[in-house]
Image (cartoon, rainbow, N blue to C red; front, side, top):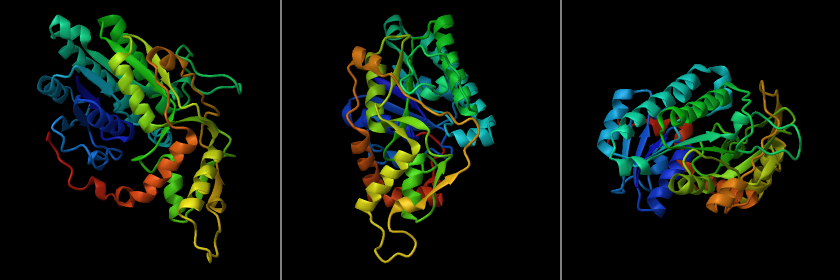
Length: 356
């Protein structure tokens, strides 16, 4: 396989690329605009592989996309490039409309132009895998309800609305043009190389700096947590063996209240990086927890029914929330240089402006 991964310098995209290079014989092209959340240092372990190449390209740039398709000639596209931070989408939705909707349209059209000219055998084997989120479903009322692949869409934020729009475009391109697509909707990811604006790394790094640990509202919002390397395995399984036209929900079977997540991080840090015994401010990281005003339109509960991908493709998460979170906290303790360069902005220095 030759897989073109969009957004491959991001959190989930880099995990997918590391998995493809480390665990398969796939050739990989990483196409990323390198916005603030794109970090090539997350791919340092595979960057010298002869099976890896990088293109700094905006998915809205049709001419550049056509060039990449001609040069790399992928057998599959895994589309992860997206603006993904809900708070940022509330403050400035324009980038989300442009990247998540217009960008997906541009990529679909570039893919269709390339795919239409393929020989019949290659055309039938080609796949376009669109990676989305469970946030397109809105939130759940009951404590026992779960999102399934047929749950109606009811997005609540500009981010989730833009992702819902992109999902609809992908399915329309199959229905109208016959493009062989697959769609996956995942729950909240966490793990190594996560950009510090997201909940888990934000709490870890704030705690290590003895800063307040902000929790929205009363912290009772419930999310299903999925270790990013489990997600990467699932995505590769879908693009390799999934049935064209199908949607697969991917979840970690780990429903936790946001406050529970923050407290679990604090307990791990108390064990792995305890505060100094003579500190005047706090003896436990939990004392840094601060409740702040809830954000607008905050969904209360997400929960994924992942039985379809388990039943049809045999995928199951390998990490529990407890094992995955311990690995995550330990990674941030062991890789201070990575996140210190993100916090300082140094990771954006010296970026390449062309293919290499």
